[in-house]
Length: 245
View 1 (cartoon, rainbow, N blue to C red):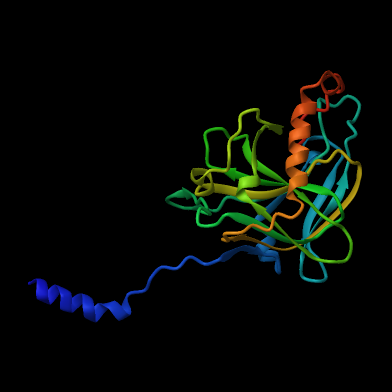
View 2: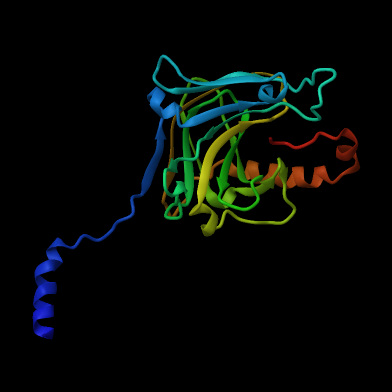
């Protein structure tokens, strides 16, 4: 009996494929309207603010996130804070099983190929949780100018935010969250009035043992300084509100 089993295994061995994890996985390649239909553009203009934005395909067959950011509050409005523009992927659904979550636990960084305007954007990763306002966020600083750039952000650089506020408790983007991603998005909420312009070629996740984190110490330093400043009397008197929407 055992002899036949070993013979069967020996014959089947050449046909057995070892599952190999790809070094990178493209989540979205923005080259058609069909891909853009998987995203929604949301601004404070949708709730009575004065910002506007759009997410379209440009003449070079790239996605274009553009518009005008305004922190102005219309007199008589019920809004307390305003000034944000964002794009966000929609949650795919199946008829019988409902929401389809994305498992990114085999990768350790997300990479954007963009041509920006020099402004600072926030990358938002929303995972499946009972707290709907929880987001893992990381800053993405664009250089501006005519050149394309690949911005790679390790998952270890994301911090937890709730309702637009960075949380005092430290919580990493752990494996349980990366395995249950609902949406991926970009947010502009730098409180600088004026136009913005961000071209996006692709979004992908990568698996690597060494991260290219050049410039990311600026993100971490900014976070630490902002956390300290938010607790000062000067900040509380100015009442800036959430830094993200």
